Image 1 (cartoon, rainbow, N blue to C red):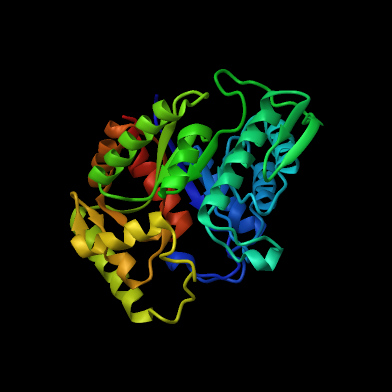
Image 2: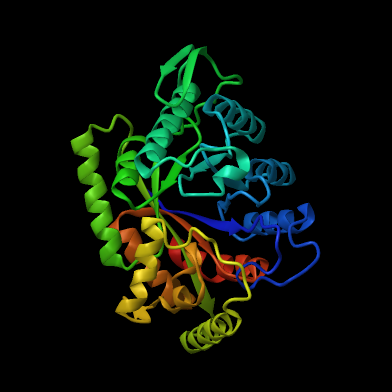
Length: 354
C-alpha cells in the first residue's frame, strides 16, 4: 500500500501553539483556510484536527475548511463522550456526502475534562469498552441498514443513517483512526480500528507494537480488512543537517527558558503512550539516527514530545524506515505551520514519493 501524508491544523483558542506566531486571528476561518489551501497546493492529502474540551469543535472546523477547499481531507478527531454514536455517524455521513468522500475520523479515548461536559470518569477498561462499542456502531451504521445494537453503553433499534455512505473503490466508509498504547487500547485497535496511530517512538518500539497488534488481530478474530499503521510526529526540517540541529537545540533552549509560563495538560503523563514518549529521554537526547527526545523534558507533549530532526534527506530517510516496518499513514507537523506546510511539502514530500 502506498503511503499517505497528512499535516496538522492547530484549532486552538490560545495563540502561540508550539512556537506558532502569536496573532489576533490565529484561529480565524481565513487563517485556518489559508493553511488548508496551502496543504492542497503543496502535495498534502489533508490534516488532523485535534480535539479536547476547551478547544474549538473539530467537526465544525472541519466542515468550514471542507467548504473552502476542493481536495483537502480533514482527519476529524472526536471523543465518544462528546457524541452519541448514531448522531455522529449521521453527521459524518452527511459531511462525507457533501465533500465527495473526503472525511477521515480519529477516535480519541484519552482522559479529558469530563465533568465540564457531563461525562463520567470511568476506569480505563470501561472507557475502552465504550470506545469499542462506539466504533462498532458507527461502522455498522455506515455499512448496514436497519441496525439493531444493544451494548452496555449504546443501544439503537432499526437505525439507518441517511444519506448513505457511497463506496469509492476499496473505501466503504471514512477511515477510522485510533490511538492508544495500553493493553486495553491495543485490543480495541486490533479488532475495530482501520489505522492505529503511533507517536514518534524509536523504530524498535514501533516494530514491537506492530508485531503485537498483528498477533492480536489473529488471536482476537478481527472481522475487518487488516489493521493499518500510522505515525504522528514532529518533523523539524531545515536546508542542511547542521542548520536543523542548531535550530532544534535553540528551540529546546527556549522551551526550557519559558517552562512554567505555558499551561500544561494536567493529564500529561497519565496516558500510557505519552508516558512511553516521556521515558525515552532517559535513554538519551537522540535515539536512532535523529529522533530528538529533549523536547519532552521541557514541556513538549503529544506529537511535540519527540522530533525527527535534519535536512529533508535526513528526515525522509528516517520516515522511509518507519514505512519499511509497515507504517503507511503519516501525520507530520512543525511550526510556524504555514511556512512548514510549504517547506516540507516542497522539500520532503517529493523525496518520500520518489
